[in-house]
Amino acid sequence: MPAKENERTGLAQVQFLTVAEVASMMRVSKMTVYRLVHSGELPAVRVGKSFRVPEKAVHAYLENAYFDAG
Image 1: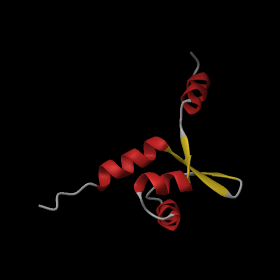
Image 2: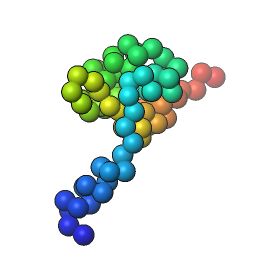
Image 3: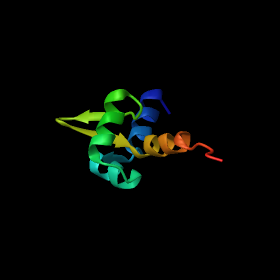
């Protein structure tokens, strides 16, 4: 399969979430999600005037955010 075809297939399988959905998942405000996106900590795609965040990026961010408080 050509490289371009692989890219299209991969993008078709990406699940994008709205800022409100990410905020709900993370139990934070939408403003917090916007701050994470604008700081580059959470990757996002701009669609018109709004942002869409890949679901995998949210999971990766949360996995890396864990710390041992003990």
